[in-house]
Image (cartoon, rainbow, N blue to C red):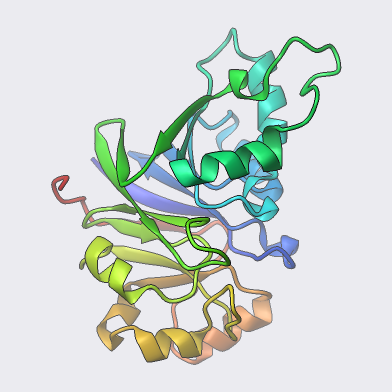
Length: 248
């Protein structure tokens, strides 16, 4: 089994030219799990894989991470006879927020007779979930209000933070070496996102080799972070992952 992490997009809400931050876990070259579904991310997924995603994990409900779900609903509903409904994994705390953000309007279709979630298999999770024989850990991150944003990890292989401030205690537990750590980071931090100064202050220096930074504001920011010695993910990057350890 060969695993890789494909970055569909690496930008923030104000940098659509970099693509909505999203990744795809691939197994033996095939998509296994899409992480987040912003508008640009869904377009990138369809362009690359020529098919709808079979399974998605949602980190949080800001629109640059979930706006693609409305278009995915239409495609999934009208193609339902040809394929299984996409499976959406989301922390149970996010379900009411997802409902409010993408599903709570009078009629998903003008013709009526359809509820939004009929096009999907919505699977609320808490500490983690099984998917295609692999156990994924789910952990809280620091982004705006508590219990509104969650990261994803495959033990020994990778961790994806979603949008977050530094979370050293979570990553120390869920991203043990040799796991790759895909981390929200721009050149300068703010109350919702990490900056390189935050990572320098709060993370052990030995983690730096395993960090790949995304959700930055511009290509010039990425270049400046690289110049300072950080490893930055670019749209389209595909990184080979370590083999996961046994589920805990």
